[in-house]
Length: 156
Image (cartoon, rainbow, N blue to C red; front, side, top):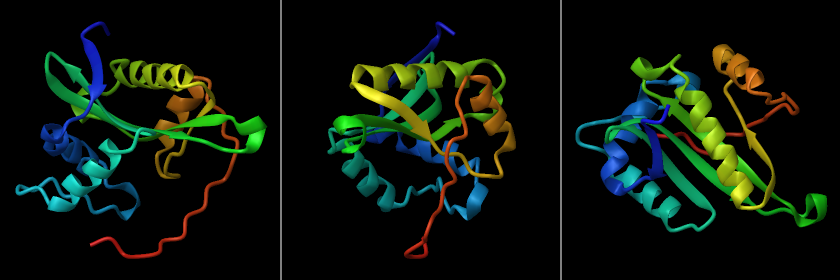
């Protein structure tokens, strides 16, 4: 996987990132790659980019964005004030799956969490993503909690 590289996203990457998210509409999400790209994505990117504990990452092959994920570094009081690394919105282009790219992405993300001093990395995955669950378990991740959500507004 030496051709796979990772970097922090820029606002110019937003169309490619939103297209990756829109490929996978599990859970009733309403991501719309446009064009035109809805300005709400630029506002969300600015909030992520302006927060030192957030990183929006793109995975590239020869300059083409083929994957994305968001890393969040969460402070806490549990475990003597330990930090956690949260890996979210992991997506790989459909034509790049089953080539070891996801494993490389997750390994890279875990190393970023270690580098930030996190005692653990965690992620969530929609219940409908059975293949993704098998993938994470194959990588050594453990199902440890049940997740709950309470939607406060409807996304338009």
